[in-house]
Image (cartoon, rainbow, N blue to C red):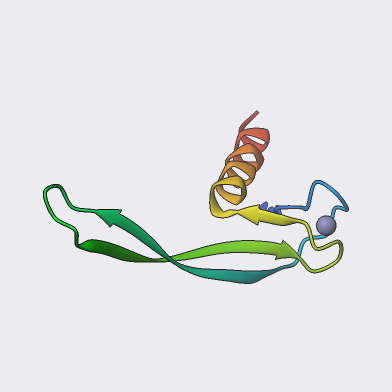
Length: 75
Ligand SMILES: [Zn+2]
């Protein structure tokens, strides 16, 4: 007999398990030494929003949450 577990990352605010992706788009400017020229990087940040209470989580927070789930199972 096989034992399969499926643990979901849960919103710590409302215990919901579904999230949607939210993006922000920005330009990060920086000056180059000895030049008046501005360089920029395009930055796309991705966060995850709880579909129930709208609390947002970063990718790192989700990863940490999943690591915690793994630790709980291994105990
Ligand atoms: Zn929530």
